[in-house]
Length: 78
Image (tube, rainbow, N blue to C red):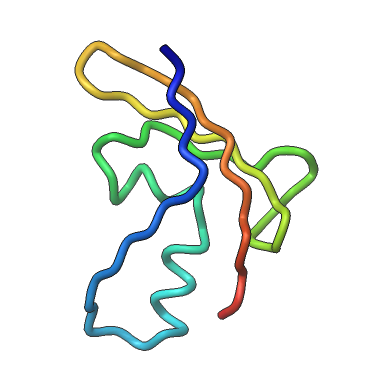
């Protein structure tokens, strides 16, 4: 069975400036440094950074399972 996630939301309080935090979370290529489940993230379709409509390919890995997904940036507001 294929499961398709259409939305995702996470909330957390972090002691950092909004600009510093945006720089970290908007660089999806660094996500594997912060998540043990994400193996790789790369921009696709000519995207080179966070912009509304930009797409990236994420490859996740947990135990013996590996699966890709193709998120789309819906908000990019520093």
